[in-house]
Length: 260
Length: 309
Image (cartoon, rainbow over all chains, first blue to last red):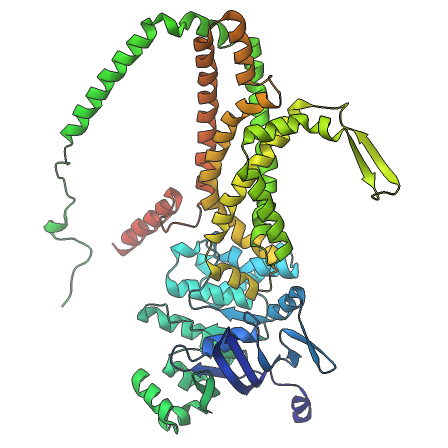
């Protein structure tokens, strides 16, 4: 058993990942690893590059330096010999299919109801038959506690309900990795809990997750690894309990004293 | 500390207030009605309008067939325009610089020259080009067509009107596409959808809400622009027929009124169609519930109250 898991690559492996927008350097060499079934929580002040790093993982942003692998596969480029070739859009789309993403502002399709939002990508991208897609979507809606909202349009749902539909939509593609970009930042405080609840359940079922969030309670409870980023680099990392109760670095201390 | 929810206190009884009155609206409406009545009386008694001639020709066979031709010109040229415009707008916004330039040049030429000139040009097209040959330049020819022999002014009018309109519609569609928030295409991309699929399934359907009202406008505009088909020269449409009859009987005013009445009627029908299209594409936009949904919620509420009692 252990021998097999030693050979399989980590779900995400970043080696000195750099990203700049023009002259602005947003990521200055981020190196980390996320094992299968692990939950990594990224925290840091706004502008620290944590969302950009998340967006690099599914190639919404193209990495400028270093290497980023998901499940052993280089993201955004093909490597032949010692040369890198930009990846054609079709192959990039294929890589993204296996990586689910949840956005701060949900980004549900407003012209489709909850069920249609969920079946859209499986049917259009993977060619799943309608009946099978609907069946799966109903399961997912039940998982996120919204069985009765299948025919509701996003505008008729609360923020928390919309975000749970968005999670179900991402899960419908059966991703091996889920990315959460500040999933509760746009929600009323009383609605945060229902979304975090769904995420906790997902983590306990063994989903590999990368979460950018300011919810330290969630980080303490669910994360296997907590990473503190500032100004495009990782300042400090470790088990959430240790890092939260005993930060070593001045910048981590200053940040934590403000958010906790 | 127990508050009784089921029986509301007297202060929350249904309000029965005197509605706000608007006396000046009534005054204004009456003044306008009087002025309108005076105008109609003047028009009815003025011989220059030639109402008997109007009555004689409003359902004239030539006029009615002209109406039918005008509708055909409008619909067919708009179909051509819409198809072309979607392609042009998508090209304009595509990441491919070749597509972007081609689209820009098309718009530059077709928006930058008068439609009348374009229609005259399409009328002359068979004279200018005579033959269409398909083959290797300076080499063998596979296919040859003499277009002079099949100069069809109806078809040329449709092409001329459609190609010109496409340039304007492309700008409307581009504005509609740009109005869809970036998060929408990002979410689609993250789900593994290709650029084209994202356009077709996510962006364009949402852009429709912004595109439809000005396109309805363009449709109505096109209906009237068909009267310029006379430049091709194509004269079997409503305006051409009306002009032909008027020049024979020397009574331009009543026949212009005949044409105007028909244009107004068709426009009115188009406006009804536009209303339903707009309603269809605005689904999911408002948080407002439909009558059906409200009814269901109200029923659930009464059911809950009955259950409690």
